[in-house]
Length: 313
Image (cartoon, rainbow, N blue to C red):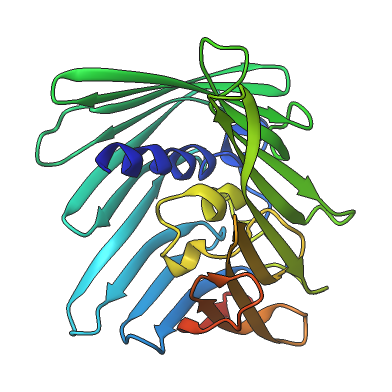
């Protein structure tokens, strides 16, 4: 379970920097939308408590503060940036597990990530990134109980900007990967489907184990241009329960529904919006439903009521 925790953490650590790793050397000021997000307050209407996410004037996330239903408060994440506006480090608190994550660059290209635990100060997770045209390879060394487990993941993008992911797979010594994710988009660059495939050792073929399908409105997505974010944060990261990371950051428009199908089970999410005069969302009703059998009526699991405020209005 602990290895799975850090395996899922990989996508957050890598792709939360993906936009920053391709910035122009001559222009280190990230592109920002017409309105820059300042705060997002997410109230948990079902279980109580809230999350309050803050952003700087460039639209970069700076922290996420949590108030639990029992009134206890803590900071889940704090983000730090270097003089080039690239993400420098992150402090993450998830339950009893706290970690520091440091990002290293060659020029403006992300080449290494080191994750340490304050309790041990050991560099027990290390990622080395290398690039070959539109492909990116990530070697991950995970140190656990004095043993090192190494894995390699390959990411294939539409071009050398490394912004639009086509598929990713875990590389092994066999001809076929053990796990693969495929991504599809509509004509407006919205992610519309993610397919997960696993290797069947008996048939030696990749088989679909789950799909996630998305639908959208026609309005402006305020998260799209946020430096240091990427839709893969929402798709794969272990921080998927953090409200700031539950929307699709890469797509042009706002997600209105998400449906995950596995075998005969379906899990769904819906998002209802209120917009301002510039077509940016100012309120979101984020509803998550329990998993059900295909064809059964979904039952609400929890509801977040989110309020967004901007610097420019």
